[in-house]
Length: 233
Image 1 (tube, helix red, strand yellow):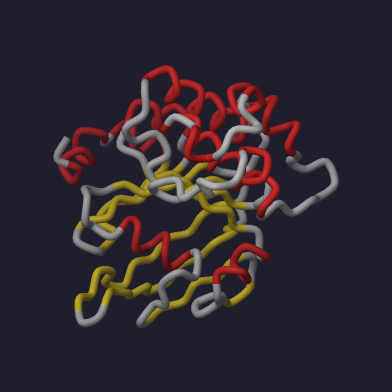
Image 2 (spheres, one colour):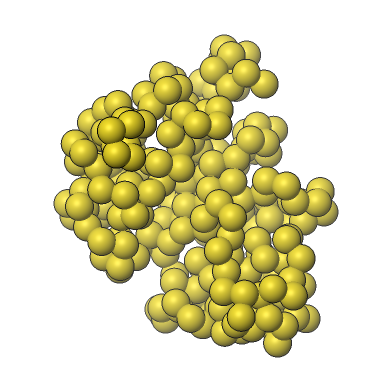
C-alpha cells in the first residue's frame, strides 16, 4: 500500500539535548498507525517534527511525495495533515462554532460544521458556548472537530483520550472507528492498548528516541506481551 508520510533517519531535540536518534517510520494511506512508548521517549517530539513545529537536526520527512523536512506548519496543513494536540489548545474566548470555523478548509463532500455536530451532538447543543465554558471532554471533541474541519488526509491525535471520563472516551473511540471505516489515514498516540488493538493496522514503539519495535496488527496481537515490556504496563 502507498505511504502518505515517510520518515527516514529523523533526529531532533531541544538545544543541546537530542531526543530523536534517527527514527524511521511510514504512515500508510487509509490505515490507522499507532506510535507508542513511555512518557519522555520522543512521541510528541516526533509529532512536532511532522507538523513543522520543530525543525529536525537531520533526516527526511516526505508528505504526499513532497519534501517537508523543514516546511513551516502552514505548508504541512496545506499538504493535508491535521493535528489534535495534547492539551487540546482550543480558543477559550471563541464559541464552539467560531472554533470550528477558525481554521476550516472546505472540500467537496468534506467535513462541515453540521457534520461535526452530527458526530458529536454535545457540541451541537453548546455551539454558542465559549471554549472555556466546556468540560474537558467537550473541549477534546471540539479539538477533534476543529481538526476534521480542515478536511485532512492524515489526522494525528496526541493522547486523544487521556484523563477523560469513560463515557467520553467511548464516544471518541467510536468516532475514530467511523473515521477508519471512511479510510482516513490516522496516527494515534494513546495508552489504551485494548482500544488501540481494535482499530490499529500498524504499530511503532519508541524507546529513548529510537524505534525498537514495529509490526502489523497481527504481529502486535501475537507479540503483545513482548511489546508491553517496552511500555512497562
